Amino acid sequence: MPCVLFLDDDHTRHWQFRTRVEELGYGKRYRMLYVFRAAEAIAALNDHAGEIVQAFLDHDLSEDDILIEVGAPSKVPTGMTVVDHILTMARPPEAVIVHSYNQVAAVEMCARLTALGTVAVQRIPFAQLLVLLA
Image (cartoon, rainbow, N blue to C red; front, side, top):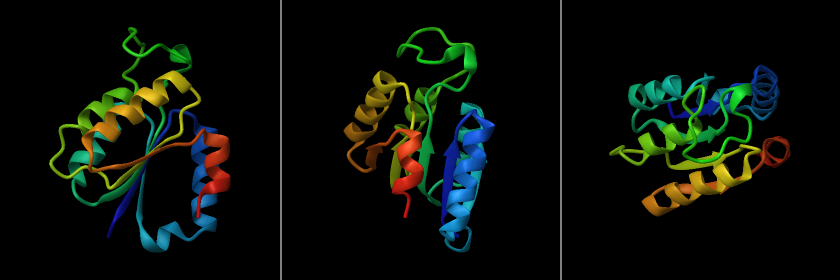
């Protein structure tokens, strides 16, 4: 079954996203993978290589790292670590939506993924994401 990966450190956003995709019937079409940390996302990408059709990625994965600059030391690995892993994959996700409110980091995440040339990439802040999901 094709998979969808959702990475975010915020439990409320997980609940909001899960509620929305359940309303849309994602569970009937996809295996949903919900993770909170970069390492969990990378493990899911490895465990389900070639099966993840869409990934939703946040950048700042700790309250201590809110709006952290790209490349700055962080308390926990960021979503950029996941992007860098995707760049090494033989079979990356078909599509990635970066939903981080950290605009500078989100733009950089999208630029790196777009350079890969094989992944459909969008940047949609989380609040808009819930409305735009179909």
